[in-house]
Length: 375
Figure 1: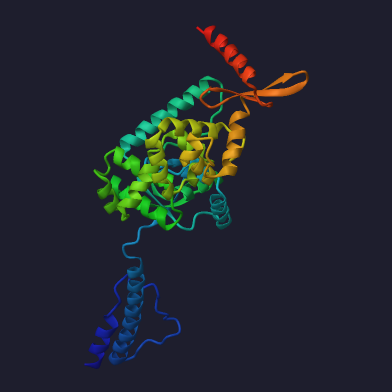
Figure 2: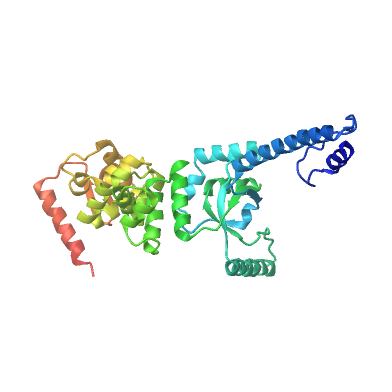
């Protein structure tokens, strides 16, 4: 009986492939009885069970996680909804981010991309081939840029940093709908480095103009923002380009400036846009706050008799505005008058000396003769 039990115990083996810890048998003596064989089996099974439980616990930690891959950043295109102004890639913050990625040997936080459709990839391949052929025909040399295979969901700054550095970018690849892409990108921007108010407005305006969302309310609900903030951002995005270009950079325009700028444009768009063009072409540099005050000050625009809102900014602006068209008029070696023109081409003559009644009459006569000679 004992011999039969021993033979049965000896015939029990562990299933192949279970566990990664082989039982050390070189220094372990073989059980001589069936009871010893069964005891050894229980011990071995306990080890396997413990190992399986450990592996199962490790698997639970990563269950549902999406693996990240290193991709060639040249194969990844920015999203059509991205509205980072080029100035944001010259900021100190972005330069520091790029340096951090370079020191780490890559982006530690993965970006997210979605694969492009096969038709889109094929169209891009043809464009790349045509551009390369034209360059070679002209005898030029063009660096090889592989066709795009992915589109950024979020992580445009990290992608741009890796592209500048010429290193692979760590990315999660996931199928994503257009609305999911927009919402994911908006949320990620606000969690990491929020877009400027103007950039945010441009992004929202594009989504509405292209029918991604049917209304401001639906957009606000999707991205989890107040409709008032959406409205201010959109107001900034709808500003005329001449007004936006008057600022040192669009990134400086603030949410709270949306209503005053819009109100001034509604009151007199011509006056505001002319002043904006003057500011853009001025040799003197104005801060974003000064530009805002000069564009929204009714007194500064309409009346030279009243004190402007910001007298120092207005004085410097007036000097800069008159300087290009300013001509000195002399008499007997002395500067007696100046002729200047404003942004609308209107002329103004200022005399150094006080004008008498007879001189005024003579000047009026000269001006009348000048006007009579005009076609």
